[in-house]
Image (cartoon, rainbow, N blue to C red; front, side):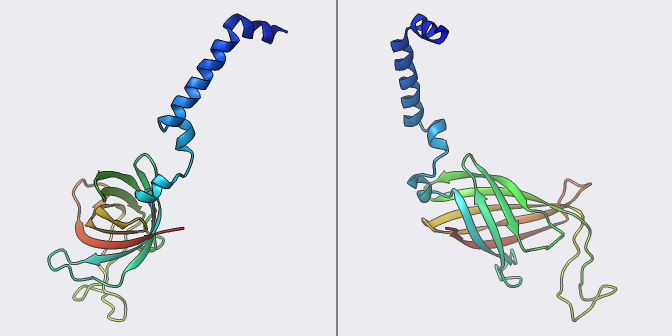
Length: 188
């Protein structure tokens, strides 16, 4: 009985109208109710998970520096991203970062991942060089950043170009930088 008395005291009809108005505003403005749905507007943008092949490149000549490697990148609503890759297995964590639209079908992404431990290089002319192993430079515990400009070529494909940088934990200056390109397909 007390609930019915309270409802009457608040003016039940006015309360019902107010609740209906709030729900209608949230639905039409892309508020809470719409934010949870996966509507067809996402297909026109970059939001979603992508299978990506990354190729490291010589920054001066754009020549590939080895075969491409696979990554998964998820662009979340609101401008964050998460990434997993097969490069540096066991040494590099997944990447975390941000993305934003530059207009049209162009986007910018920036992510960071931790490099967990030092890895000695295998370079010709250095002590311990083993010609039967891949030629690789040394890496140090710290973090790696990746910045790319992405183009949505159609609703299900992207290409990107950009740079990477490696930092030691105790330094704000990179000890190595590089370039890369990528091609991706929307995961369904």
